[in-house]
Structures are given as structure tokens and as C-alpha cells.
Length: 470
Image (tube, rainbow, N blue to C red; front, side):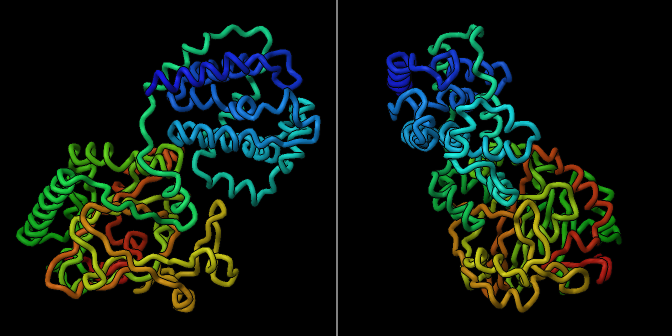
């Protein structure tokens, strides 16, 4: 397959790549090789090097002449090229290409002097492409998957117009075709996630992986029960134990029943083998949905034991805003089947409509709306009742092989477990790598401030308003 892909690309560039690159004194092929060479020099990953090589392939497949902008034409080469690539290569190659023209519009608005640095034909094409973005359009652009890759690609594109630069030949870069990994999610799933704030990936885990996750959950659950027993026998609170045993799970009981565990946290930190399993299974999905690398931020397993309390309507960002990242995404792994009877998660299906109502929104973060919610007290983090009542809630029933990813702004809730069996689910939350590592900082803070309300948002657990659970 790699040989066939390489042959097709080689044929296009060697047969059509001698066409002039706009008004520059280089050819399309020379421009492509320079871009790939600069990407390689910057130690970009294989998919990005290929995106740099192929970012203008739409010009060659469209065959609309050297400078269509001079004729008043926008040949949408980024769309033609990305569609051509998407039929052959992963989104990590095609999507930065799709967005590299929009990245120019973004840079014209956000980087002083960028517009004046453009070549005359690029200025003409900019107007045909819609002109510089507004600030609102800049915020929306940054929320697109692979937007930051597209910005870097655009900057490389701008720097790849030298007449005296010697580069390797095309076969040097085509070898990267063997190094790129398949896309773990489809473009359809990626668009659904962008639009709704959550996506359900059915039958994501194999039967062997389901058994491995169930075994890990059982081991974590046993360790949590032992920690709870240890706290009782030593006469110390779980808050104190969390401070003392810094490499162990953090156990949190139900507010109404201190003998019943609500959740436990620090799964990745306490079990390196489990952390590696999730890094191989789940992290690639998070990265692919967003088009950039993410790192673990926090984690937990909700036990949802029979009769356990409900998780009230909320947005996760109501809690996470106390920390550095302005956005998070969570992977929900169902250890047990989730049904309406045992309190499956319910998401807002009309969030876009709710967010357009100014009276429902208290603030925005990079264009994402945070709804009015209670701050402090027994309803800490809960979305205000009048807003929650306008939300159309979609129950999402799940099997153990399913994976759900949702962002930190989509409203969600779950009812109490009315069955006689537990409803275990793991929640692994991530933040963009560009915001730095937060996992250890988050749990250092949590161990020192176990009862702080920011760690008890819309949950059936204790906060400073209650007593120290023993």
C-alpha cells in the first residue's frame, strides 16, 4: 500500500510539479520539498512532514494554472487537496492541509505585520478567501481540530519560497508514509464531537481489553476498600489518609453514607501499568479528536453502588476553572453496562441552542460558554434550575465495550442507581499538552485540600460545607 501511495504522489509531483509557484521564482515541486525539509528540520512528526510536502497538492490536481487568484478565482485548493488526501491518508495529514488557508486569515488578525509580509498574489488570494478573520472567527478557528498544526504549517509554507535552498528529493520524504499511524477515529466522529461536545464510540474495546479493564477496576476497588478499612482502624479521616499515603488512591465516600464509597481517584498515578494501558488505548483517541497532543489531568472511578446519589446537572469546567487549562476532555469507560435504571450519563442535546441565550451564560473561555451555576453551598457547581430545565437531556446507555469522550463544557448529569448491582465507570480527564503537565499538580492540591468545594462539584460527596468524612 505504501508503495502504491508513494508512486501516485511521485507521479503527480514529477509530472505536474514543474508548474510555477505563484509569482515566486520556484516551482510547485521546489516549494513542496522546501516545506517538507523545514518541517523535518523542526523535528515535526511524520504526518506533519507529509502535510507540509502535500499542502498544495490541490493546485496540482485542479490544474487551474499558475496563478488563479490573478484571474479572480479561488480554486479552494486547500479543500480539493485535503479531500484528495483524506481518501488516502489519516486526518493528521489531511486536516492541517484543509485549514492552512484559514490559518493565513487567522495570522493576519493575530500577528502584527503578518498581512504586510504577504506576497502580492497572496494578498489578492486573501481577499478571495474571505479576508482576515474577526476575533470571534479566530476563537472559533482555534477550536477546530488540527488548527494549531495548520498555523505551524502556514508559517512553514510562508518560509518555503527560497530560490537558493537545496533539499532532498521527493523520495526522501515519501518514506514517511510507512511511519504514520492509522487514524483511531473517523472524520464523522470528529465532527460530531466538535458540534455536540461528546461522541459515543460503540464497540471500541476488544473483548480482551474489556477483561483487562474490568480486572483493573476490581483491583482498584479492592484497594479503595482496604484504604477505607485502614482509615477506620487507625481512627483517621480519609482526608488525612490522602495526605499521608501520597502514592495511593484517594477515596471519597458518599455524603449520606460514609461507609459507602462514591469514587476513588489517582488511578494512573498509583498504577503505572494501567497508565501505560490507557496511554496506548485512549490517549490516541483524545489526540485525534482534537488534532493535538493531550496529557492526563485527573482521573476517577465512580462506583455508583446500589442506591447511591445522583450527579446533578453541571459542566465540568465549573470545577476545572480553578486550574490552569482552559479546556479539558474526558474519556468515560464503562466497566459495567450503563442503563437508565442504574443512572447512565445524560448529555445536553441542545447545548448549542442554550449557549446562544445570553441570559444563560455567565462567562466564556476561548469562545466556549460557561452557564450560570451555583457557587459554594450544597448545590456547588449545579447549573441554575431555570437553565437546566431548558436543557433537553439525552440518556446514553452503554455497554462495557463502548467509549465516550466529552469536553468540559457540555452539560451532563446522571440519576441515582435504582438497581441492585453497581454501575462502575472510569473517567480519565485530559488537558492540552501546550498547557503543560497538570496531573501531579492537581493531585498535590487535592491531597492538601481534600474538602475544598472545587473538588466536590455537583457530586454526592462532602465539601467544606459538611464534616470531615471519617
